[in-house]
Length: 104
Image 1 (cartoon, rainbow, N blue to C red):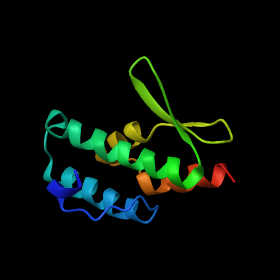
Image 2 (cartoon, rainbow, N blue to C red):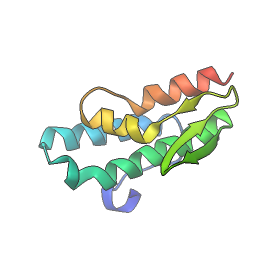
Image 3 (tube, rainbow, N blue to C red):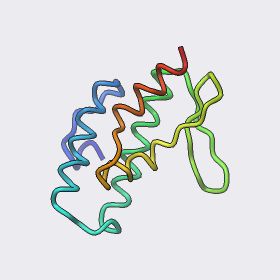
Image 4 (cartoon, helix red, strand yellow):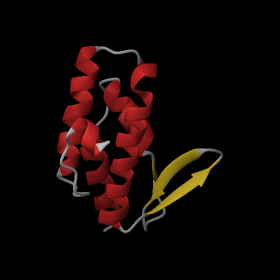
């Protein structure tokens, strides 16, 4: 993902600004969802890993769905949030901010 999109991703919360901008750029091109579904899943998974590293969370999966659970027990869905970003109603950066603040 990083090489194909030429993104500089370092698993920092700040890198999610770039990811949000990439998704915004994709959305402005108006591709069909099916054409970008895999890329969005990858960007959402990246955001989830940022939350895991920043908040001390862990991946949690059931029935093919994947979430991040923060130490406070809350579940976060970064993959769905990437889909919401593509729809114009979400932010991986803000999701990370909320998840890391909730774990303090």
